Each structure stands twice: as structure tokens, then as C-alpha cells.
Length: 410
Ligand code: SR1
Ligand code: MG
Image 1 (tube, rainbow, N blue to C red):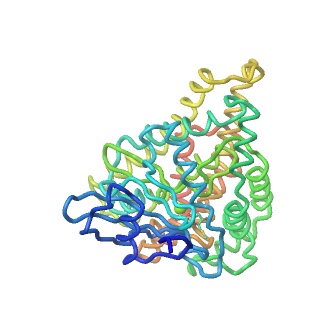
Image 2: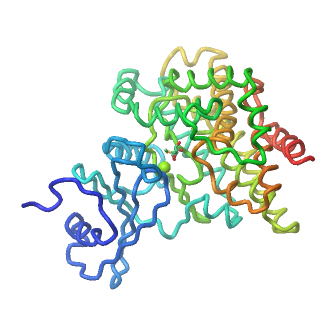
Image 3: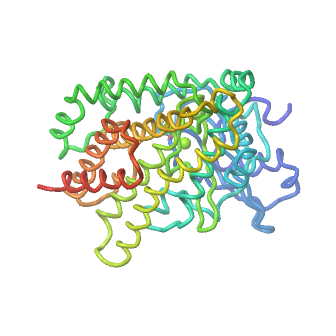
């Protein structure tokens, strides 16, 4: 019987034979080793390498239940979608995603370029590493993958085809629940509220009905504004980085939604890293340099996204009405409002929701962590309530500094 003719979930020991069978480049390699390297929430990721030649590859396989929860089930097809999107994004943003070698529709696994010379960005940020080119790289990635897939640029029938093809109800439901519902109303008891902040969260998040109204608006915008083909989960755990290179991975949450969702996710996750630096680094030059880099990066991500998107709009817009005087400014203002909203919702959901971030949860000092969380929640509310004020990068920073002061004062 043909090998791998039916699906099974692979363990480390299965990987050498699998790679030998599937990739001609490894067919004659008798010295293959494998290690599970993933620590994501959903899938299994392995590195396989030849101890003689040093050749290596990454294999990612989807399972029926999520890696973080046996109770949550998803169809296995998500890896096919992820491969397609990585290939598509690679066309729009060459060099900013990994190369895909092979997709296996039975095992729901794919093989891609080994990025072990890069680090997962969240892990590197926990070590307080600085990446001076990140703002340029990530804004290139976002502008070059997002705007070309909108109706402003893409042929409208082609866009509708993509919208159909990448409709992603299962993964969107996770976002609708975990980002846009449960952080405000803990309907399934899945939230993780840090006990010292229980009263604060009860008052500022669960008890703030105006906030709920804004979050509801953002939720329905997320579900109904099929603006561009998003990555859908663009946090620092979805980015591989090295001083001179950045690659975006894991676009399985992709769908047609508001561009601001991706942009806001990036900004919020830089803010988590900033809080971690504030709370865990010794005062001194290293801390000052790290926080300065993060602050500059936050400002640049906001401002460069806007300016690069304006330039790309000028260059690429094909829809004749998109060139109506004043329309571009209006369009970009709404993208930036969505961005501020998504920055806020990501800050809230990672602080009180089910899927938290190590930047915050590994802060060892209880009062410092509680202060950082209050800062994130207060900043989040300001980003959400003030999202239509055309916030500049500097304004994002002012809001963060003010929230830090208020969140950490006794
Ligand atoms: C159950 S999945 C939890 C989170 O992990 C993914 O990376 C997404 O951010 C999702 O919300
Ligand atoms: Mg992921």
C-alpha cells in the first residue's frame, strides 16, 4: 500500500522517513534528525535536518484538535489555504515570506524553507533584541500585500473570486469569539484575568457599556468590511526575524477583512514588548536604547504605513472613482481608524482573553505585571474611543505614555 495514503498525525520519529519520501532533495539522506520546534496554538511544526550535509527543511502539519486545546476542532484544510497565501504573498512581497517546497493534501502538511537562522520575533523581543529595519520591513509587507488585493487596485471580478476562495469561516469564528466577544463578556468562562486586576477588569472592561458598543462596531466592521486579503493573525509570534531579514509566517487566519486589523495587530504586539522591557529590564543605557527603539518603531509603523499606502494608492489605483479628488484621504483615514481600533482590541484580548502573550505573562513581579496590564487596557480604550481622530505615530506614543503613568500609579 502506498505510504502516506491516509492522514495520521506525525510525531518527531515519523519525520525523517516522511521527508525522504516526499522531497527528492532528501531521498538519499540516511542521517536525518527531526525535532518539534513549534510552540504555536494550533499546529505542529518540525525541523528536519541531515547531520552529514547540513541540509534542512521545516514541516508543518495541521491536526483536528488544536495544539492548545483538545476541545477546539478545526478542519485540516487550513494548511492548504496557508500555503496558497504564502505563495501569493511571496509574489506581492518577494523575500518577506518563506519559500514553500511542497504541499501534501492527504497529510495536510507542507514543507518550507528552514528559517532556523532567524528567531521568532516574540522570543527575540523577550531577550530585548533590537531590529532596526523592522518598521521598514513590516510596513513594506503590509502595504505590498494588502493594497493590491483591494477593489482600489485589483480587477473587481478577480477580487470577488479571491474573496470566495479565501472565505475562512472557522478561523474567523475564533477571532470573532476570542477577540471581539469574550474579552468583554466572558460567556464561556475562558478568559484569563490576572487576579490582582480582577476589580479593575470588572470596572474598566466588563462594566464599560460604551466600550462594548465600540467593540461591537469593530466586530461587525471586521465581519463585513471585506476590504483586502489579510494575513489575519499578524502578531510577533507570526514573524521570523534576523538583523538583516524578516519573514512573515502562519497566515492561516487569512480572509477578506479590514486592512487595519493586520496593522493594529503589529502595533499592539510592539506595545506588549515595550511593557515587558519597562517591567523586566534594569534601568540603564540598555533599557533606554531598547525602549527608544520600540517607541521609534511604533511611531514609524503608524506613519510609514500611512505614507507608503498613500504612495502605493497613487501608483496602483485602477478604479476610476478611487481617483476622485478627496477619496484617497477618506479611504486612508478609515484604514487608520480601523488600525487604532484593532490596536485596542488586540491589547484587550491578549490581556484578559483566552490567548495571552508571554511578553506580559512572564513578567515575574506581580505588581509590575498588574501595572503593565492596566497600562495595556487603558491605552486600548483610548485607541478605540479616539480611533477616528487620525492619530499620528506620535499620538499613539502619547497615549501609551499616559496609560503607563495611570496604569502604574498607586
Ligand atoms: C485558539 S487559537 C488562539 C489564538 O492563537 C492564534 O494565533 C490566534 O491569534 C488565535 O486567536
Ligand atoms: Mg499562528
